[in-house]
Length: 410
Ligand code: AMP
Ligand code: MG
Figure 1 (spheres, rainbow, N blue to C red):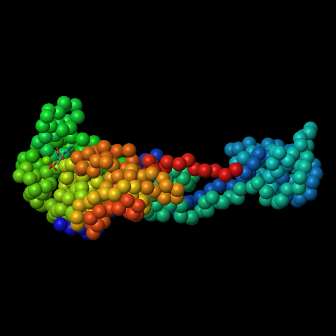
Figure 2 (cartoon, protein in one colour):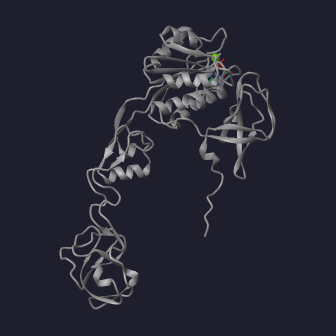
Figure 3 (cartoon, helix red, strand yellow):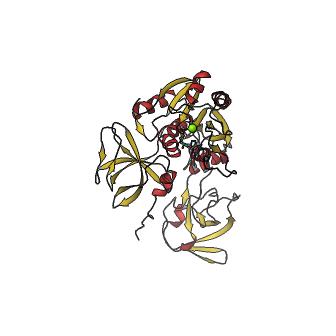
């Protein structure tokens, strides 16, 4: 039996980064750039106006009032043909190109119009209200570095420089194999000895949440040959997640099946609760996680081990769920010599967090992981977790932590 830390290291050491593929910008959000992207153009392409108003020569408006003759108008999208000469001005709009001869924009709020003439009421500094060519992006500037997690603003920058396609690390394909003679599909009514295959839904959603593509395979019964064949079929994927059949029972064939198809098994059993029977192995660049069948164990193992592995495959460098420290609200007795992942609910406490353990900590009680649960990490060396003590909590669902509205002053 190995420790949680050793298990995680073993998995991440064996996890490669996948190759690249080209996707359109609309499909690129959240993906990891696999290339450096350099701009071939300036953004903006020309000096342009930051305001609605008039384009003028700075010398003409250094003192006020200044009376100028209007010689034309330059709506956004157009370029005024005639240059601005001393004593003249042209109407201009936000984003319009600054006409030749002009170097300054006076805001419409500072103007009076009459009969083709305009009066500037206040002195305006040369260069005011002008956005410079290349102020955002200069030609040859690197706008995206490899490894960048592309967000909405990155995609806007890429659009501005005319990049419609971008090379990103491929999304991991993850096959989900549910084993168990007691399992039925969701549209069947389970008999007293049966359970609906809920793990497939849990894992498919978690895989998608991690930015990977799940493929759910049909339920497989607890027969060695069936499990071997199904895992072999699943092995086309980058990652195989099986659930159930990985413990020490007479019908637990997953490890034997992995061995039979040549998977190099790296470990079986981790000193943790829940999820002790977790097994992991590799076959070439393909990863195999034998997750326990209990729904909580499967999802806890996913959060702690599979999630970071999928994130690494997809090219991310920040691969783990966020961790906060929280004060434990009520004492928890824990298993001796095992790292225990206590399912808790996080509540805000001034600048910090309080972790409230769910009443039911059985690995069969999946509702302990609904409603934004975190996993409080109870150290292997402790036998009891005391109320008021501070522990790390792995935050499985960051969105549910955003319990407060931002406060704005003024
Ligand atoms: P096992 O790891 O195969 O011994 O299964 C442990 C427990 O998890 C048993 O109570 C199973 O009924 C339950 N279980 C196993 N696989 C699933 C599944 N796919 N969906 C829901 N529960 C499951
Ligand atoms: Mg089973």
